[in-house]
Image 1 (cartoon, rainbow, N blue to C red):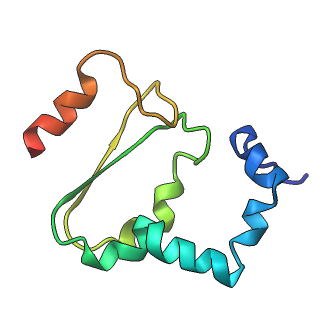
Image 2 (image 1 turned 180 degrees about the horizontal axis):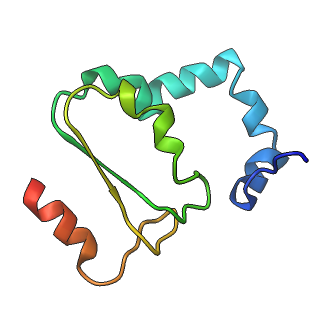
Length: 100
């Protein structure tokens, strides 16, 4: 059985963007726009919010990069949300308020 890409990335796959990541020109774009490229400059505590229902990333995708982020890094999974992390009520603000 072959693994299937999530439906949310179908447009990216249709335009072969996933294959183009290996292109040197794409690397220039990633080096300037991907936060992972700047991870060594993250000197303050970080809060990463993720959704178990994300249409693009699996719930455990963080395991591939979390150990590469220096310093204090807090993680909050927001249940019952999608990629946009739009929770109901004040839940999002309640998470951020103590950090500000």
